[in-house]
Length: 245
Ligand code: PGA
Image (cartoon, rainbow, N blue to C red):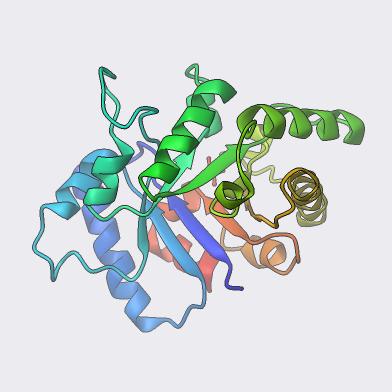
């Protein structure tokens, strides 16, 4: 099964910078052979801009993802974007529950609704979960079980089969202090076990948090690590190329 690597541009770039970077991705990917399933998540404005281009320019050697979606199909949700509109413009993945959105007030209840809506729109939801501070093993087990229970209550096995989880310990995001690969593999194993016990299905778990060209390989070698979610190192083609190489 090919591993998935997701680039998350967050709100780091101007529209011009995002478009220039995507051009570099597109050109650069022609020159390297990669078996990874690549997903790029620029901001909404960039996604809309890309969709307005003619069909020939709209072909990319990666999938497009959004960084969130609104929790309703359509409705009075000022500032949100419908998963259905995103699907219409060629988006196929969406990040949900990123810690930076949780810090702005998103909770498991709303994230659950967002996942449901994304599934209805036929987007692949990538749920981000992770503890804020380093925890002992038993506390981490309890934390992850609670997140999974609250987020996926009432989900069916067939819904779970379409979902990806990204384990992103908050303490490891945006710094030079990533979770060690062996530890990440252990936590992924635990997440998979909790999901399997509850839903009798296997799920892909990606790792995110200070991944870069130097450490990417050491994560991808582990069995329970099905891919990576990359923030900072996705903001330059040179750095991202190192991650996927
Ligand atoms: P980082 O961000 O790679 O810069 O740590 C990851 C993320 O927040 O998704």
